[in-house]
Image (cartoon, rainbow, N blue to C red; front, side, top):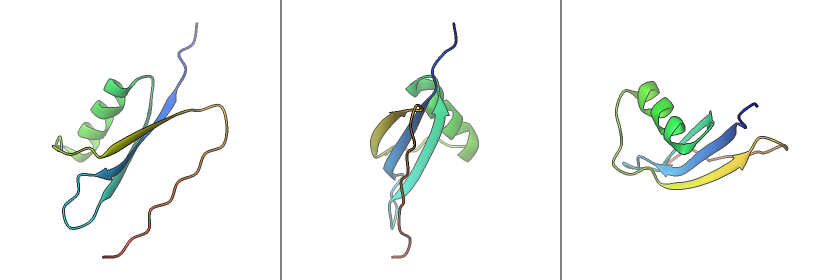
Length: 67
């Protein structure tokens, strides 16, 4: 049995002067958070809003930059 993979997207991730964006493809939210913490080498106190998407159809998201 194969595990389904999900796309986890955090909008408003680790806000300082502007909101950030984080994403991970993982089998569950715990694994997704672990992947991100390992990638950035710290665990932010504010992860922002989470949306979860099963990887069974096309998906797109964009966040404009600037300040």
